[in-house]
Length: 553
Ligand code: NG1
Ligand code: ZN
Image (cartoon, rainbow, N blue to C red; front, side, top):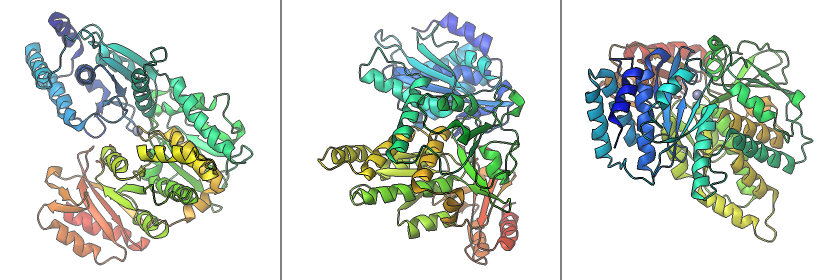
């Protein structure tokens, strides 16, 4: 049923990279762009199989390497509902890629493909099911070529319908994949395939609705917002969003910087969310001109955002993912209380061990809100937020995150709103706010709009936001070790199980430092071990961290 000759021809033409070991990590496949042709070819085929397995629903594929340097690229598959590829399919992605990479003949790769098709009982001959694929890419120079490698077999071998979105942000790809399937399900065939424009209309609509519900004279809570788009795809997309004719905020309140997405080498270079968070300083292109302004930085594919400001002494202050979580938790708990729903709907925050200890204490002790801790990796946070809470707020400290609203949340709000005197401001706010948040994945644009709306409603300046709690001094270091796989963890990565005896040594160091906390884990994206440490006394932090590093090396 597969056109064998055609597949072989395309395989020979496309899979030039050989003997590279590919692995599908939490961020999909990611490596130097020049080594990606083979894995693009096999990932395209896997996406088609995933769609066939799911009765031809739209499956998304995004070509991006996020905050990594311009020479890199990567690819990941998105499920029909906009979530990450089902974990049990990640090994298939690797098996197929490595089969093509290490095969000496096409037949070896083909045998692996047939094995997979049989294992998953995929019916390639079902004439009424055509696979549907949505593809998108960020602004990298290598992406158009890699897209051709990815899609080469889709139509000609598998008769797939391919919706090419061109250059989009990662969260746009997730959103549009989900929306396209929802429309198909609702039989809205005239509208079926969703577009980028649907994304802009939806989120601008939600923002305007929320903003105009309050009498805010169409002004933000700060005189000016500067947005650093890391010279990535966030720049052009954000301009399209803000060009929307109904956008209520005056254009003189917003300035976009580092928006040269057409100059490849500038991508993520001395700018963007990762640079600002790691170096705790302003990105290139910004000087601390006005201490009343608010600043934010996206990463290269606009799925992360961090905020910051400079005080009157020109000191830099970071408002990271933890600060975003706590701001939303404060705001939404208050709204639930005002709507008298705090007993029927459960709100909670999900963090990883990298969240600052002060943020965790603030959420528990000041906001009286439940907190869960999961392993590093968005899929773990997302799962906990979606299954444990009606309003599940999750952000990694690095700025990737979103809020998941449960089905019960929507039903409750809808039923309360339909009551005779149900139109309270708090209910309306909760209903609008839930629309403003991208439900599929962390989204710099949607999160930014939600932060701006929250600050405006609460009439908070950046400094007030920051003052809610004070971060404990902290440090994150990377250790290169001979074999990182020996570092095995338990308790959501907060404790080491192996090497035997190391954790008790770490514990004895921790005990010496007031408010001390430290943990060691192997990175999932780099060949290194990460050591995190925080304690009360800034002047003791280096010593604390070095003692731990001493035991790790
Ligand atoms: P690793 O390399 O496993 O620590 C890093 C980030 C995660 C997440 C993933 C991308 C830190 C400490 N870790 O993971 O938060 O963004 O990359 O999937 O920032
Ligand atoms: Zn990213």
